[in-house]
Image 1 (spheres, chains in turn yellow, purple):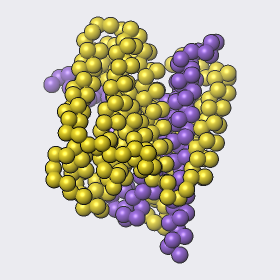
Image 2 (cartoon, helix red, strand yellow; image 1 turned 90 degrees about the horizontal axis):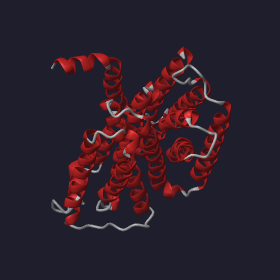
Image 3 (cartoon, rainbow over the protein chains, first blue to last red; image 1 turned 180 degrees about the vertical axis):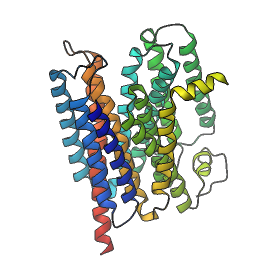
Length: 282
Length: 104
């Protein structure tokens, strides 16, 4: 257990150091590899050192399922990343961000029935992980489709109100779930509605935003994925996930602002202006 | 007020981690040149694949005596998270490779 915590600390330090190197042109490539090494360390140490609450390790049968799943993901990810055309890279980043968001949403979805409804903090982080992860997933998929030329911008004045209504709906479901008095395992119907509404919100959120602003939106959604991962980190009380997730959340947010500045746009302009609220400011 | 203080005390370690990570995240990348925006975004995106730890723990705890929704979706969570991690780091590397060539 101590060794696991030490590995997580080391992995977290590698994330920070990697990100630091990534922000300088000469060292960027090394930074990427260092961050990757941190991730590998976190994965391997979780697989072999993680213990259940009762002090037992993961059963061997599961280990094989885990290793095979990771193998499939690695080969597929590696292949896609290596073979895609250079010009298609921005949408690929968006696509990978979508898969990360979906993974966060799935973890939250599956962990929710195990949570105690009276543990408000745990219920809230799980639901937030689900909502933020789903928005990051569907939003990134739309961004991917737009950059790939598969989806056109759709602008309608009514969308602004639909989006606000969806957010209110998300809040209402949150409140309902907490006060309904039902146990978390009995709330599966509500849980899937929340999942669906969040997915829809992600779609409608990115839909009206113009293609030129997509990199900014992807960066924003990237910080969402980070926050969703951090929420999942709270579920497991896992320091590596919390630190990595918050780090990406913070770095992603600042990067979003920096990208806006580089384009001479304000973030509000990108998001709100797209709803047809302000004068077109391209 | 009392409750807030108790809450703060109970979770003081987590709150410390959050506060320091936010600061670190901002500090570490605040002077990045604009050419590196996209690779940095891609690299940060790969790091957000830490969710894979959650997937591993989830499947590790799942009951494997029969094929349950939890097991199937958990496996998908791991696959998707690995896609994020592996694809993310490889794409970042390719971008930086291109960047280096351009510079010469």
